[in-house]
Length: 56
Image 1: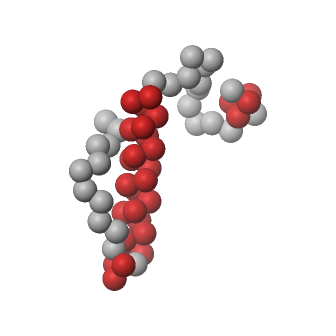
Image 2: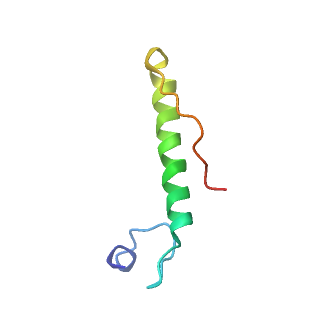
């Protein structure tokens, strides 16, 4: 809530927060994107992650 008060979030958050499936989906998608970008920068050390659901 404090981060929202200081305008540090991209999304609105209420005192109820976000459901766990939304939070997990967003974190998984972010982690997969970081691995994808690292693999593009270092193809000889590519990171392969399979079977992780994305935030749809």
